Length: 601
Image (tube, rainbow, N blue to C red; front, side, top):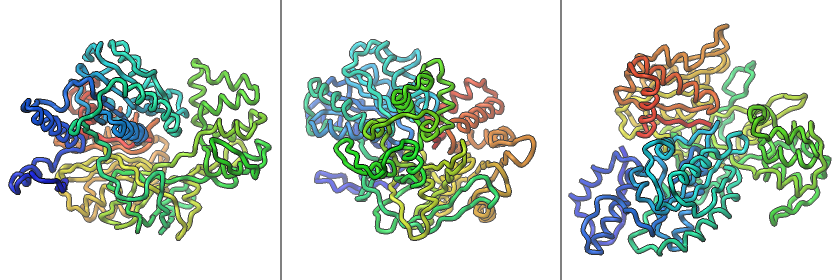
């Protein structure tokens, strides 16, 4: 149950009875619904001030208003949309900011100024919070939009072949529906937010000429679900002390998975189950040495880039991305070394080959295979800025106090005759007790436990995807939630890779976990995966969903999430006596309702 904070507002105010009734009505609403009511109330007040009486909907089709809609899976599109909204509001523009699943689709036909900021996930898919809006605009029910002026900023990760494809498709579709662009389509890598800045400035400059200044009650913005009262943030991380750094797989396991406990004491940082912890990485010195050797460059030489002067070694260790390969670097390397074969890999007809290279190789592998002479400034321009890594939080603050726990798979392997490392995971693994890590909280509003504690929950989390479900079970235990908890967990080997085995067994004993289904893929000749367990338990799984259970999936987006979704469609089609299309549509409805939530990466 949500607690409704009473604002400190000037008179006239509500009497005690009115305030109590309002609090009861609002306590189970979602963040998006609360913002809708805020917008509607502001429109009511504005209309009353003008003497026009009540209005039936929030902020009607006003040409003077800019509507900003964002679709975000990991928070990058949300952050850029919020930045743009703040700057627009500071410039005196009337605007509203909405997450895509909170945007009333019926209003699109009356919209006059629309800005979409949307990311692309995995192999060319919309973020979960924008699936409904994307399907509506792309589908037959979309209205003609001859009066709409729009702009689209697409975000993506250029490590994936389908870079920004959702943004491009929406841009083309809105134009097809008759709308007019007030700014050309923009694209930005999710890890190069600075790329979006010139585009947003252009949009704001053009918008200033289109929109009238905002009135005192007209500006309705929804910039933060929960105000950040901490001085620490993504831009100013907190140095969290490591309290525990434990390997939680067997010694002979082929993978190194760590349970990490960090102190947040004195940070002012707060989190909810479902949120992520951002960790600013630092590359291993051995990896930086590999780069300098392959490049034949002096690591101590000062390099001036974008107005900053640092030794090249420091640029590579702390400032630039050197473990993740992306198409921009491939293009720059091909040009620097005159490697036509490498440049040909970027052709559209070779997208499958490119995808395989992006998935399997690190930049150091290509540097060795395709030698080139680099100027340090050109090298830095070809590399993306180093970005924080996000880890699903594996603890409930109710249970652990001013601590935060993580479940981290360490990237450390041999390939092509050389050692390879991850950026953040290697830093985390190497940081012992009493060491510190630079961290911040990244809220995930779409991955929340149900407000109604009597609702059942189904959690699907293979491998380290189980992390947030450890937090969920802790939270439900501490809050005495009466709903049942069902966990599906999978990994390679029961004996070596059963993460948090003792905790799950204890949870079954004390009743905080009601069902546990396991799948270990390498313990028999016939590999058993978590999606097989879903099908085996299909009748009961379908019954839970039909009775209102919330469904959560966490883990790998590229393979697991697709396989699990397909298994869920099969379960619903089989036991709900529906066609696959109907079952998929029903899952889509659960997604829109917030009863099917995915934290996939």
